[in-house]
Image (tube, rainbow, N blue to C red; front, side, top):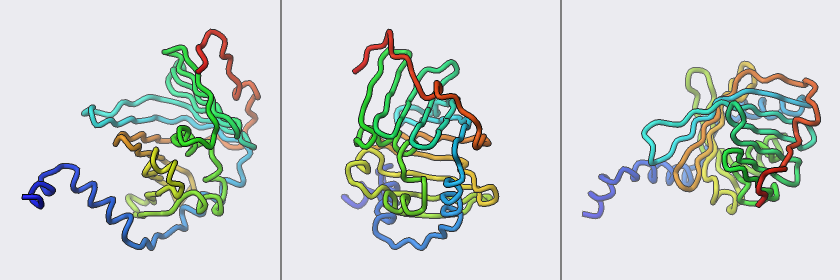
Length: 219
């Protein structure tokens, strides 16, 4: 009966897949991944539009929202969701400021805290070089679909991995662009961000990375 129960449980295939990922050695072709990582060193600034799809276990259809991402070295990042802006995240390398305009609230947390793990994928240093990447991630799986290299990543730090167990990247080997990033949270929800063509090394105003917190409740 116990074996039959596992086979009927809808979670069983997923648990089996994760078990295989964590127990089998991975011989991934990291050439496309490392070419994309090496390209990051040539960027001084970047600005890119995206569409974010949020999948929740309780929803049959994902919720799609447009957004924009911008960064300027060293360490400044702006991530906004909605048009007009509904949610905003700013990072300066040390702190992350998260603003919810619908709730009229703001929160500031250290950039290296486990609570910032979801945004740390965009604001951290893990994608700035091949060396930094291998300090933060290990490649659990790799496949190629329609010419796009898809990587399944596992975070090495247990505290962050508790918040974000899995990260998925879609990389175009022809342009060395990141097509999409997907994060799986511990509650089973997934956030998939599909990027458009980025604008590289453009002049970004300093005010883009600042926010007026007046009128907001800061937690």
